Image (cartoon, rainbow, N blue to C red; front, side, top):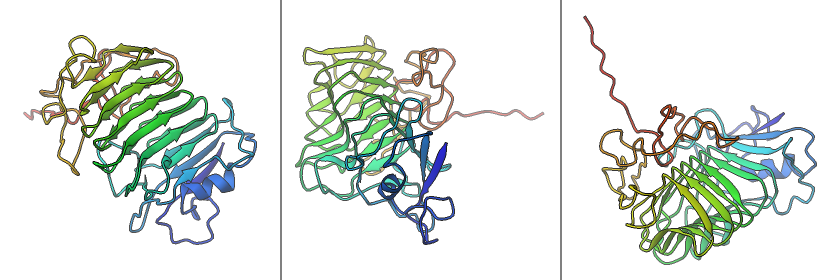
Length: 328
């Protein structure tokens, strides 16, 4: 496997993708190392050091005409050790955080097949028009353990992810997506497991525009209208929760975005970890560890191991656990 590094805080100079001389942006690494037919798996590891600046260069693979990954040789773009996304935005870790420049793929556009995003923080620092933060039109894609956040804009449409041909999203978090939004706009056959989708009072939550889709252990809330929208298409839900009264699974409707269900819902100080005391989402889900990869995951967005039989709903298993040690 080829392994290349990205670090927008590097001062080493002469970037070549090695650990000592990383590229200064993910886009630079893609252009330099992925415009070819893959003969082995490629992994791009992202971190930020020094003053810990963000990666402010928009990412797109649509100009890489020789990009040919495969099921055997995929491209994995992941957070380096210590930089994985969590239940809150962390400015000390790697984050892809460009200013607004275009609607489709405002932060990242993926048009090639067999791409995997793992553990990345992805957002936009400004918005001057409609934004689709992640735009995914490549086949056989997987998004795992990622955090996608918007600007809480109240003027323009904002989507966390627009899916064109189907996508697998597991243990990921989407929030701060403004008041005119669909958190997810889906086309094609997609799968959503243990994700947390938080709107900003927008029109829709997860909008299944077409395709045959499956959702398990997911939470959708904070929108003004419908949180799980099938619109005549197929969406099979298992132990999925919503903050409205009708679109969640039995027993998991009317679960609001509040401080009882999440650690913090304060604007600009959000933390969507699940408290293990008082949250209606705690251990309300279904074990999926025996399903086919990549749906057999056993850890949450923070790396905590899920409970053996009944896991929590959303991207987090629990925020904290008090352990009492008796000393004699």
